[in-house]
Length: 467
Image (cartoon, rainbow, N blue to C red; front, side):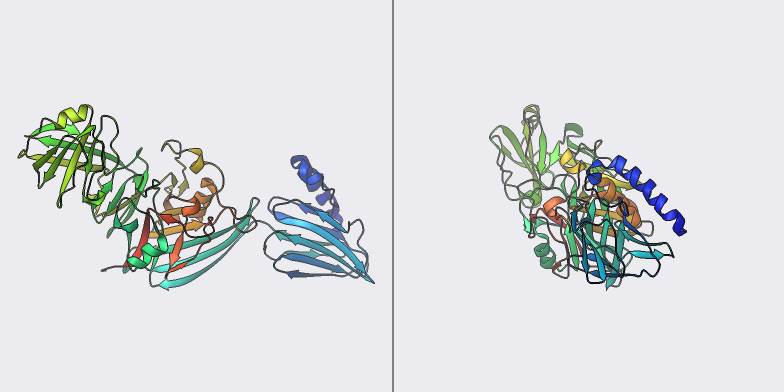
């Protein structure tokens, strides 16, 4: 751009920006400083013999412009109120003139262009700076400092080659449905190389949604939400449903409402050893203890002992009446199946999450269809996500949040676009907020928004495999 065009171009851009941002216009900055959503542009007229020198400091970041000739129209100090640019200061000392742009957080150094008529400095506010390192063969750790018009973000991610000698598995806190434990402690307990927090969980630690460990279904899906299945054959992400049936004497006796969760009105719940030693149900249910397919005990007032190698059927209301037809010694069959049935693909680890973020390499947020509320769907927050690339690499991603001028967090759309940027063909959201945690070699890599690592209900871990 030639010097004679510089001033009119700045004027046109400033007029447009003032129209869309009255708050910024009220700061009455000189026309030569343009603060745009993605960059800061400083354009200064250049007199004969005038020289400019640019230098930078960090913590806080400052861009310092020194000139040997006067600069006109600059206040001694002016607050800007921009997400990135904090204030502008001008000072004169002897025959030198200094303009200082102070920023709220670290940005890349700007690009200088000048000719005989003008000097211009462009400092980007939207950027992504990525560094990677090899943790182990097939496991790569990536760290990003990035920012956009809403502020900075810190991203940590793992790329795991599922064809190599590490496996990705699931862990319950305290190795039981009810419990809470820090991700770092779970990782250390199972000898994991790395780990992130996993699925949503209730206040008592119980997973909310489908959860399978080593082929054992721990809890059933909720609202057909998105889940990821992992196994020796790779990974798959899709919406997952559930059917369950109780058969007696070759006849369908009842439908199963759920697995290892509190029993609600007119429901039939199956309790397995993964739930604990007792069902802890109230007196309004009727329970049938089954071992190796044979009814061994009837419990009309609930709270049965869950037998080793067996299960308990617990019914309320109409289902209470159904179960009361059974007698000790009757043979029953319990059929539980996920839809789709990923076990046919060799999948033995399944964790629910949601909403979906990416489908076939394209952004696809399914929050409303999966019955998520605004606390998940709206606004910026710390986030954890999981994705699969076209060449069967697994991505585990965390984004710090709720830390002004350090990391503001992401919306679901931004998170989905990040996963696409990292190469995800399919991706879904996991539990986030204060739960968001990434651990590598017993070190917590992210900055939890609670100020310390939170105890959570479950984790996804990377462990040595048998391949």
